[in-house]
Structure formats: structure tokens, C-alpha cells
Image (cartoon, rainbow, N blue to C red; front, top):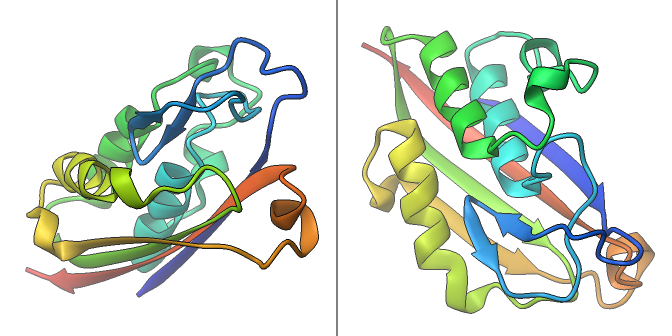
Length: 157
């Protein structure tokens, strides 16, 4: 079992950034800041996957000091992490929560589940994605950014 947590702040002026969550582009006035595409959900899932296998974190394999990862597609990083974990492990399931006041992710959850499942090589029924708010408390409640948490269960083959 692995746990992944990630946080990204919104770009102040949008900075031409698109908002991508779980590999799905969400129409919104601001994108998230980050070295890659700042897909906070994909990053949390990647860390959960790596943690479940007892490996290093996402920053070890895809450091933000490496220009080759500048504006990287986080689903590609998740696919690479799945490859690093290896075929001796099967992804039993992933469950994730996106924490933000806005945008509401309800209409995009199915697409996120499908996108993450494809990157992991599993059926979408094995991926859960939910959204929650912090009732306007903290940085997510003030609309300063988005957080995500994920757990991943691996089974030996």
C-alpha cells in the first residue's frame, strides 16, 4: 500500500497554463504552477504507486531540476513510473481525492478515471476519483491552489 500527496498553487495570472487533472484538461481561468504540467492528481497517484512498491518518490525519478521534464505530460511520467515498478507487481486499485473549492470536478471524474487507468494498464473500475472542498479553509479554500491525495494497492504476481 502506498500513499501519495501533492499540492500545486494556481498561477497568478493564468500564465498561459492549462488546468490538467488526472490527464484531463479542465476548462478554468487559471492553471497550476509546476515544472511539468502540474497535474496534481497524476503526481499523487504516481507517488502512491512508487510508495506501494517501496521505491523512491516522484522527485527522485523526475526531478524538477532536469529540464527534460519541463512542461512534461504527467501521464507519461505515471506510465514511466508504472514501468519502473515492474511487471512483478499488479495494480489492484487506486483511490484518489482532489481537494479544491473550484473548479468542480464532478463532470470530469469518469474521464480522469479512464485516463489514469490507461496509464496504469488497468481497468477504470479499479480507479476511484472523488472531489472535496475544505469548506473555504486553508489555501485550497481560499482558491490559492489544488491538493490531491491517493492510495495505491499492489499485489505480487
